[in-house]
Length: 199
Image 1 (cartoon, rainbow, N blue to C red):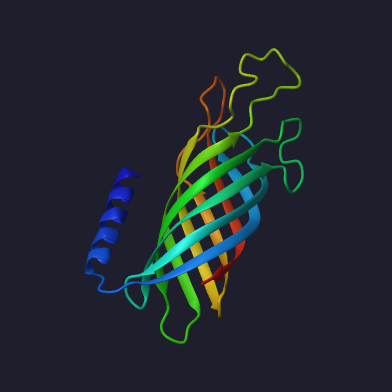
Image 2 (image 1 turned 120 degrees about the vertical axis):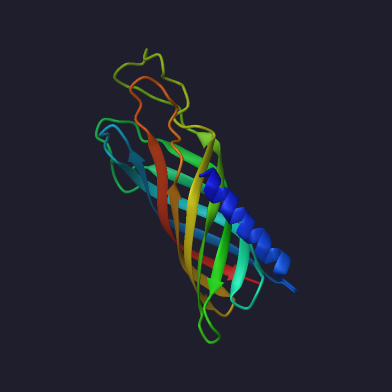
């Protein structure tokens, strides 16, 4: 992961240093979709709903390449599409995301763009462990996940005048589970439909 960050940062620095003039595009967007937790130790995969609202700044290095940093508020809700784990509590998490993508805009006349890059997330709300069967469980009341997360952010976008229609995907690269006895790993992933307005 550190090697990926170093290489990505080096690439962005090289591209920015070679840029002569930069066109800037601002985008405000909302999105919603499906989230799932990849779990280890044979634990059942947990699914739910994902919602977010954010802002991104697209800085064009060349006609085809741009760097897009942004900030977003994202909520992940377990069981958003029905009970995902019979007998278990459904947890909700809220994150502040800071993605940085390198984007490729296809040739003139094309309205398509694709992007990839790292995303850092900080949990501003973490549900606590609840065990209805055993309220005296020593880990009851403890946070379910860690405060920080790191992911790979992917995007494909269609431009329609000032509107931006796209699909975002976030692949969790770090285990965010708090390490209690018998706790399986958790990698948080999602895929969302996104609509934005650029100016």
